[in-house]
Image (cartoon, rainbow, N blue to C red; front, side):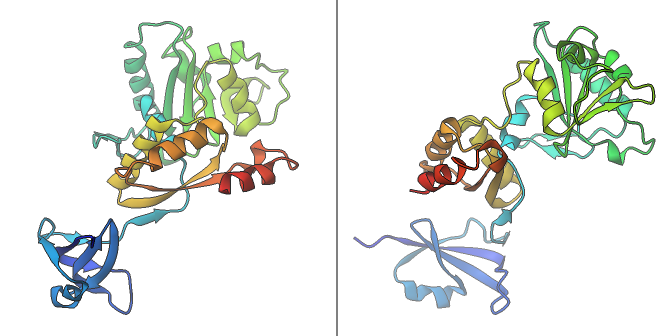
Length: 286
């Protein structure tokens, strides 16, 4: 039985192909593109249905995002405090925050909605490099939010994390702590800023936060929505923990014909031993 062909008409199609940069129609069969060109050029594929849904639109190929992380799907469970406006997986635009005062005000607003005193307030996307005043977040800023609740503020780059006094106390981080990444002031006291894995792990360990590199199928669906909202149809999951839970989630979502994203996980070499890592990845490929 021959599968049916649908030819989509568009105002313009930018093919990204220098030999045929512009077209007006694209032929699709079984979810795969057969060709692009004019309607007459594509008619040779046989019987077709003409779809004019996009006849007034400009179509482009899906973008490939070569540096991203599936954790982008899970962070939307928490509070965004970034500098730029950002669209969540459901299409809602969250306005950017332009100074440290605005970030603190946003955190206070969220803290007042949390009924459970043991719940960690986690915010993400913090991007102070764009602030005009050059102020870095310190313990005194988070003191304004709460001295009793555990608070973590992840920077947009993922390499820096701010923790409040409560977290530092629980993690036993003080002037005597000799761990790479624990930032200190001129008097040798921690500022609450923690850089890279070792220091950040100390904070995450005492907050009960779900590890953001431990993804599930819901995270991957949110990740796909975020990607396709921006026109991305192929995306990496860099520094991926290729453990059973993550792998099962990859398989579960990509089995669905409705999953709109091609996933390209890149195994996190730092999380595997030299002895076991390569063989584990080779086994997954089978």
